[in-house]
Image (cartoon, rainbow, N blue to C red):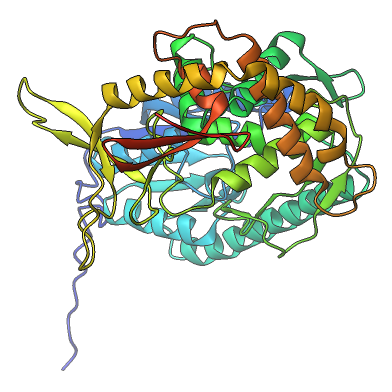
Length: 469
């Protein structure tokens, strides 16, 4: 007996669940993107925006929603593409039925990003149309074609990235130096592309090095620069100690350049890593005019290395950090806050290991006023010997700190000489009688103070002289 089969046609769109007979217009959005902000790319960007706006608006069966765009942003990742991410968010919220863009590579060069995004949109009833490849994502062949095209786009990105990397490393090997001039303090781009000194900014760089040689920590220098209203290299109002430290350790300020300090690990994520020997580096000597004399720069590096030594001495939160030593255990004093939540609040300094181990340190705590008074007392004694100290330094300056016959230890000798010169200059500028705490003198003159008991506190000055206060 013959079977009678009747076909019942579909009445709803299987992706959107809308009735096929519905006269409802499709809500359509366009997407445009260019990867750089160069002039020719800006022309392409403007052309894409104009074309898709006109194209969508010209269709009677389409309703123009919005044109989403990203200018000067790579397509290897969707993470930083604000326009793209907003478009996807609106589509998933049901505001868009169709997205039109120029090609698969405009949408995404990362195969995983491309497929995962298209699948999410498809599950939420939003179709994509790639005009150049004539691909509709609701088509059965759409995903296969997109996989192929996205893979090709991703390989093209890999090729471009490798070519750029090769070109950059070739420039490094040729000794061609480039810095982010908009965020690099002290230099401008010269006519030949190299670094030329910006005199006003160079004053700030020299001030930073001067503060450090006076004994200020990077934290303290950052605080001073912020209080003085000096903008950071990036134009911000607040300085951080990391920015100060980077200026103090950047070899470009002595006229040299170390190239390829960091490198890009992956072309898709654009993740960068500090170069620890994974790829070649290049050191260019005498590449451009120096803001800081090379000998002075090397002295600062030696001083920075010296200040890092010593248990618990690397703190830089206060003027007294890393400057007060316990006479019992030899460790350093740290600050403690008493009565932090009431009117009796005060900061005291005591040995960081006072209550460690079986034997407790017997050294007393000191408040900041006590420390300042003790320093003033010791400083007046020290100033009374200024003539002898100055004369002694001038006499031994060339012999004790000379570097003519040294092959090793030159930098350390230079650092010591700079430190002693700064001590003498500060001492000569001091009044005959000191009656108040001077922070500049504290940094420039004192190496550390040692607390044995309340009646025995000694100051060791940077020339080795010890004075009991």
